[in-house]
Length: 271
Image (cartoon, rainbow, N blue to C red; front, top):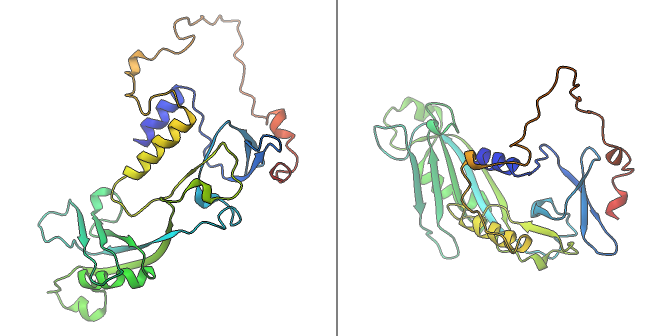
């Protein structure tokens, strides 16, 4: 799906700058709008609008933001929690909260056919809204569903629960319900996208994308059906001049454009 979207964007004039990280914003002092960004190579990339996930902001910009936290665990196990003869399935399990003030835990198990883990193993994700640290929130569920991998258990062939081969616990912030006004001194043409939330699926991301789209392009339809590729006609496609034998094909200039070459210190525009 991502490849299809990228190709459709390119067909209609979109430009992708791959492997470019943002170092600073170029803000006009009079209009207080973002004119461009400076990437890690010192290149200036000009744009009328700038969409950014809020983890890229500095601590000063987020100093008044109060984030919720998400507890997550990533596990590798030796077999599925679902007792079945098939090894080609994705399992989704919701474990209800047992104590007041805690939250239900969502468990998603992926088999090797999803190309996320080695054959004979399973990749398991556990997610919930944080009440404590990730280990405190999720380890009780892990202990119920899986057996720690020890030498004693290796010798026992009648282990009922899958063996836990590897585990990682971590907390991440949830910015899905943060208002744009919570951030400090954002230019008016900088739009904030949140990171992942606890929900299953991408409903919140789609709603957020639609809201931002209408702010930037108020008179356009959001995600219209893509046209048939055979019906797409670009300017100049109908007339293709024949190249004569004596015509020279210009080579692409690999040098940095003069405007980009004379950027100066990337830190200066961000003042």
